[in-house]
Image (cartoon, rainbow, N blue to C red; front, side):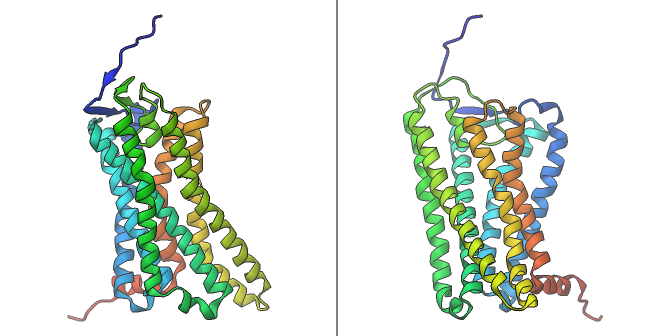
Length: 315
């Protein structure tokens, strides 16, 4: 069988096939994906409203939680509408520049999300290990600066990945991307030119953001656990630990990012549909879980939700 040397010169359109090998059941997979997206949008929007209206929640931990909610809404909206268009309405085509824009938005919001989790871990570390200095250290000005710095960091690191694709590649083996959304390595793999620089820079960005954040999140929680278990009273230990358990539960799902990242580069023996499913779940489940987990674990939020839905004005 002969191998075709035909390449495509600077395509204006690309085709996303969805989940390779599962195209026949994509319409059914779209149902839980859509449900998670809608719950995530409603839950995170409700979380933002509660944090805005309840003055007792105007604290660093809840401000970071609000930032996380905004990022989750933006990230989900960058991915799910197009994904459902592929699954339900058989609209796989996407303009090349629109694909690059989606890729940039997804990876930027992922970077911001990772940074916010680090900020939340550091906030809990200072609150538990240095409670008397917490208010002085985590001022509202510092929280604002952290939010701006995290957004800037993600944008600065992700933007070159777009430029390296747009400016370096002219020829592509195909216009078909074996993915349900535009992801960096999925686009790089279809290029018919030397992709070494793109792969190296992709690794650099991943380890700069995910590696750095994961390392310091882990160290923060190790220090928190050491401090908590040294507290003399059991009640005090349980109270301190309960403030962190929600962060830990959500953080564990972000470890799927490493699975997605490494399987795309080194997991050639893993079926493509496994990788695509896990990468999609990684993008959808944390935004879906965040309002549920934090709402369930935060007393002030639970009370406010009860007030919103149970209070009735007498006629």
